[in-house]
Image (cartoon, rainbow, N blue to C red; front, side, top):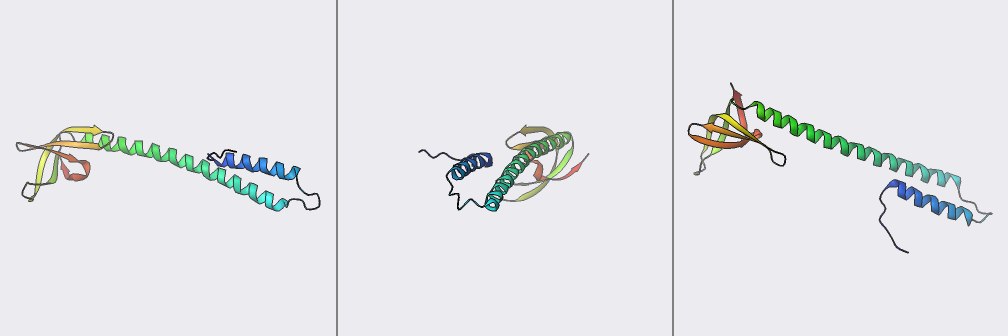
Length: 137
């Protein structure tokens, strides 16, 4: 007899029903199976199925929310093109500078999110949305 992994509550319930039918067919007529135990076990399977369905719906909702959040970040980053932003940067010597520059480009990468390309004086910096301190026109 081979053992296979159980995929869902429905599979467990079907296996239980097969076992129950076999048990009923082979039960001792003088000691029948307790109806309360059977009803309680069936109710537990029903609850497990409902939890599985809720979990699947939550996973779908989480995916939808992640897509909406990603699109919102992308739209927000794109709205910064041409605007002045202030940000912090660290020099090679470890000094932290507060700079202001104009957003020239936005690179939208599905894996890494949005990256701003900022010109400040003669230098070009790349910065994530979380690095923006303030925005002006």
